[in-house]
Image (cartoon, rainbow, N blue to C red):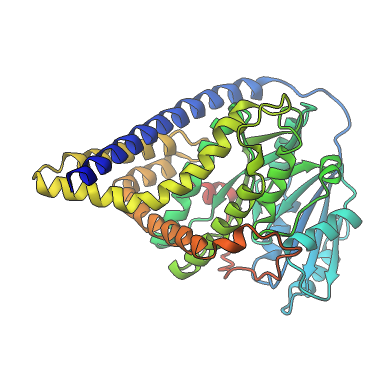
Length: 429
């Protein structure tokens, strides 16, 4: 029994040291990234013709939100945009609404195409991009997104570097009432700030589909989306990185902002995160051969740090309930709550150091964050439960994780609230 407690003690110690090192690494790297961005903002782009950008949207039963997305695109300050909607066999009024919108905006370059059978987001986007996209660059959006007016213009400037293959957007959650919404807002703000570290060290390989932009030539090279996993967007970014991330760089752009709806209920959150987790693991296993690679095409930060840590973070999810239980038990037995209070204080300070420097939050928004920070530590345990449940479910279906399917089936859009569009600045805050 004593050996068990010693083992648990060392497990807790190692996990604590690793988490502390990661916290420090993310915080320092994010600040260095911010300083570099400040300097880059002062530089003027070389003059020249602005390239055409295709914004591709796959939609399935999106009547509540699709027009809001199109309206945000028409507010874009980038002059050369082709808007391409692939209606993936919607059974509601999505296509009718889009056609009416096209008729009322005849000067805009908007095209809608149709699938008579629901083929899934990946295949629908592939069809749109391969057959109808005219742009030199392609950005993908979900049908519930609100794109910042400067997002496309800001994304294009990163491609001044010929080695940049793709740009990951800064995805924010539209704030709605309730704890579930607040949880997703804070999670995205913190998670996307950590991407600054990966961009800085050229180790980014996990890019979501919301607001991401790629060179069309790169998409042709890799064969567009694979459809053998549940998360085709992560699969695409890892496939690009697998070409050699020194010459096919993926960068995070904090100034390319897209808002999207969070899921409205705990049940929907559980379902969403299981899908994300399962798809993530499928792709990590698919590209596990990159771990430890010493090929000159890859950075060590990708093959020796980012990818191994992606696996290890999933393992840590499994250990977290036991570590928490151990901390609570020791605090109770020793009648010393210092470890629990210390964890609470450390995480709260970490949250504030991530949230308060956010470049897209105004003074009013920062005041709200300060008010929410003391309870955020406890709110995040909701996400811990969700993530733990998701990883356990994934392990329960572990055989399928290793099986490559030709095509992952149809898709359903999550429940949308379709809240009325207000000013982008208000949504950011």
